[in-house]
Amino acid sequence: MNKPFAQFVLLVTLAASAVAQQQSAAPALRGSYADTLGFPGQSWTTIGNLSPIERNNFYLQSYMEQNAAVFSAYSDSLTVTPYVALGLSLDTQGLNWNNKAQPRFGIRINKSFRHGVVSIGSGYAYEKRFNGTTSSAPVLYLQDWFGWQSAAEKHSRFPGSSWFALGNISPVERGNIIGQGYITQGVVARKFSNFSLVPYAESTIFRDTKGFDWDNKILVGGGVKAVIPRREFLLGQVCLGPDVLHQFLV
Image 1: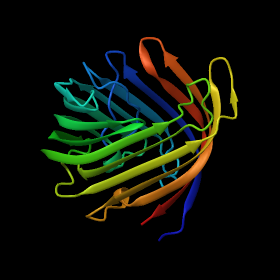
Image 2 (image 1 turned 45 degrees about the vertical axis):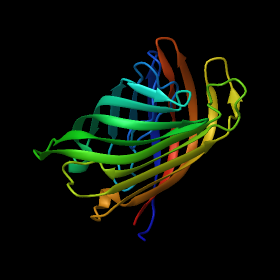
Image 3 (image 1 turned 30 degrees about the vertical axis):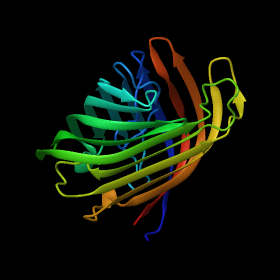
């Protein structure tokens, strides 16, 4: 394992679920979930210097998804949802793996639990890396998302969440099985009228079958964030705050 790199990170995350019955968990990424009936949708955006090894490299990562629930059973805990989605990633250093767009469409089977959802999905994706590399291919993946004690709720004191994804999710990296996982746990230090102040710890792991540096790393760290709930047209939250991360290549 390589020597860890540490960096002070400024992170801005905006996550929202559309009011048309909200959403399910995002492929390989973060979010929240609510009802899976009707036309659930979601979007999120993260801005910041997110990699200690890529010093002074600022990222913008964004994801949008629209679903349509076509089947439900077992009191709506089991659903089938076709979807269309678009992922976008940009950085200031022009690194190949950080500058890309990936539209996709497909279908997922979702099993909802009290605090999360587990899904298996398949579809077809087109990936455009802005250095000129493009590819399209079928994708197949397993994913989950779980969350507890949302900081937006009045009586929550220990907000946290986790997500996991495993599959062939990159057409450019054809045949590469990628696994990603994330967990965070926070403590509400103080609630104000419009936001909550939340110290937190977090860890992210990336592994793949082809050994690419950007797909094989562990990040651990923590920080303090202001969590600002949004309850108007979009249901979600905005998180803003500093973070200290250590990055290991594995």
